[in-house]
Amino acid sequence: MKVVQLIKSPCRRKEILSDHWYTPLNLIWIANYLKTHNIESEILDGIFLNAEEIISNISSKLIGINFNVLSVDSMERIAKTAKSKGSTVIVGGQAATPLASQLLMKNRDIDAVVIGDGEEAMLQLVIRAEKSIRSFEGIPNIAYRKGNDIIFSEEIRIDLTTLPMPDRRIKGIDMEKYIDSFSDTNTDPVLDNVRATNAYLKKGCPRRVGNHGCSFCARIDRGLRSKTALQAYEEYSYLINEFNINYIYDDSDSWANASWMKSLLSLYSKLGEPKARLRVYTDVRDINENSVSLMKDLDVDTVLVGIESGDERILRINGKPMTKEMIVKAVKLLGSAGIKLCDAYVIGLIGETKSSVEKTRSLAQQIGNYCERRITYWNVIMPLPGSPIWSAMMNIPELQEKYGNEYNFNIEEVQKDYINHFCHLGTDGYSYLTNTCNYLQSLQNIPLRKYIR
Image (cartoon, rainbow, N blue to C red; front, side, top):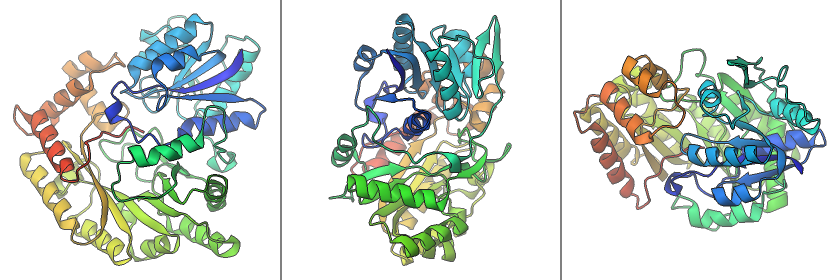
């Protein structure tokens, strides 16, 4: 019997999965951490495997299941089967941390829930599973049942600079399969003839501290943690040399940190420039003459920017106090440097009106005059557990009664309830936003997708 299998549960609606070429880096990180302690893992990725295929392959003492709010059904099926086979069942991921109590109260097939970072928790769980020890006491970053109580252990934040380089040659990960899927499932209509993959070097956001941050942000992390520039250089080089990658989507939060980029550029000069273009995410407020110059020197081809709204009042209410002047200036700087733009918008934010939606549409149209676009992402708000808007919903008695003790939600029903309470769009608010979003996305001749990564 294998010691540990790490599973990404399949989404119940395939059309809203992230692009199929994205490797499950959260599980790859954990697998490599375990490998440094001589523990081999197998990854079963629900991007390519359905629930039946995953269930038929369950054979480990310890099963770790990563899920989100759109893959709850398959998570439950996998957990039930694993439990019936005698496995210890652990769940984790963004959705698990804020819903730990509900998961443990409602589902007896789940033995424990990982809170936050999973590396050290999974290591300790594997060691105990090998010895058939059923106690969870003393293991960090988990919640578990003790009698009728839910116990939350000490939560520790791992130092990302101590983590091993995430080798993709883990059992269950066929990199060529992911790379080949790019041409079929990539939603960016511009990129052709590339061998692309994803990387992730930073966790969190410097603006997500305490109660501050965007209203819709459901990040587990508070503050920003980063791997070193040398770790970034080594990982980029590894992807290029081992898999002939020539385009890297680095989805690190707040990638464009000036001092970090200077260190990376220095390594490029000393050790040789990796031959791959980059697409990175950064905040409008981090785009200036200096950061754009550094990105250009680092061969950043495209920047993904969360603009969210074209109404300054809506931005302020929702914890992202940017002005249209700041946004336009940032986009012009990117355009003048020849860096392309992916601009993302969320409609249905707190206080949204039809007038504010029109301002957002107008700003998005204006931005097209200043910078070459890769793609524009339009999203209808999706309240997620762990976000400020979810907390605001739970402060409303009727919504707390309806959702507060559950973990399996009808997403459209949650969206409708949120929109009815927090937007000013009339009785047809949800339909209006959905139809608007579909129309705006259709202008690019690509399908509307909701991204959960």
